[in-house]
Length: 280
Image 1: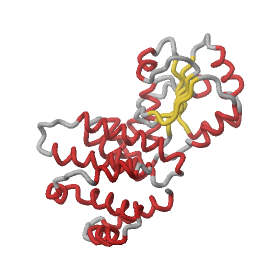
Image 2: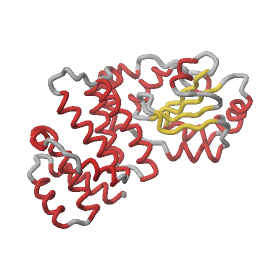
Image 3: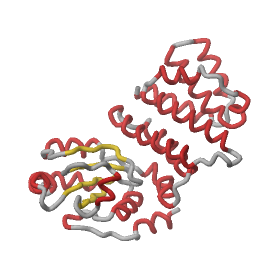
């Protein structure tokens, strides 16, 4: 794994003035290797507000200090049109914070002053070392399995973040889950099991976001519990356990606590439930 991270870091630096990367892939490799998010500035030489941000914001010492927590990438609006289309850039300056694989966590169109820029940069200066291994594997070979593993890591990661950070992280978690579903082949032998797991994980996202009605509707659906017990019983038990606690239903709490205790990884699910309760 260390060799993969090193390889990503060495795949080209391509730095611009003031240490801005100018190549997305190089920035992504550096982000994985350094456990940072990517700060993207869509700009152009003719753009007045872009020049103003260079003068008032990006050149400021305090801003540059907090930017050390990011991999900075500058995208030329005139020459990198494919990226404009991919990220829906209709005007500039357009500032994006994304993860190492290009999933957008925050974006803003238009000039922002130093104070507002600092507020955003301080908010999202996350250390992503918890996600490094799965991010590297996904970067090397996007597939349903690497997308699924990365989504699961993001789910756990979200529980250690403040509530105002959890939602954008869960939004990209859902993107990875949707991508895993798209990459899943209906002809493969484990399709039913993986598809069922993805449904449970999407519901797990709803749980973490506090969308309890959606979780309850899912749990009331008719589900093949024999199939669940073979492969995905832990996730199903966890969802029921958390909802029983949320609703304060003592009978249901006892029932699902008993089921939880039977799991080989019961301590892991208990830790997740505890973290969720403490940060909700």
